[in-house]
Amino acid sequence: MDATFALEVLDKAPYVTVSFTRPDGTPYGVPLSLARTDEHTFYFHCALEGDKLDCIAANPNVALSAVTKCAPTVGPKDGSFTLQYKSAMAVGKAKLVTEKNEKIGALRAICQRFLPHHMDAFNDAIARSLERTDVVKITLTAPPTGKRKQYDKQGEEMKWQRME
Image 1 (cartoon, rainbow, N blue to C red):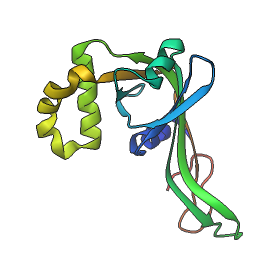
Image 2: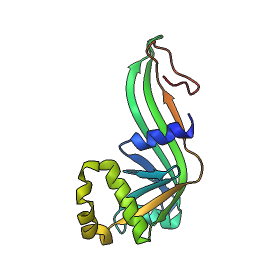
Image 3: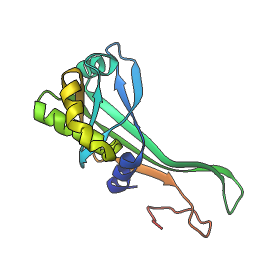
């Protein structure tokens, strides 16, 4: 599936697994709450120290993956056991945000995505916690891609980017 489909999956997923490389070369993947601000920029927040920041300092390359609409099913035509899903993958570079206005804008995007009905409390939260919160920017280095397995109402598998 194309980049538009993949971005939609990344936007709708309640979390996105971000995979890093630890300083010793071992993998480290963690589900994170990401917010996207344009077609190639994602943000997440974290503590001022920890594994994610250690990984980024050693190697800023990251991989993102997400799955939505995941449901075990029996194939309507052949009775096979299968899974319907929508998934997305992307690669990018992670960087600590140091500029205050960008950091606040990123936190606003995260809050708007996950708690839009509580934005009236955003400024107070920033005043309380901005100095003890880090923000990381992920810039995609290639367009994201997606996959899916989905059946239409007639029980036919929708292939080759066919939409309902």
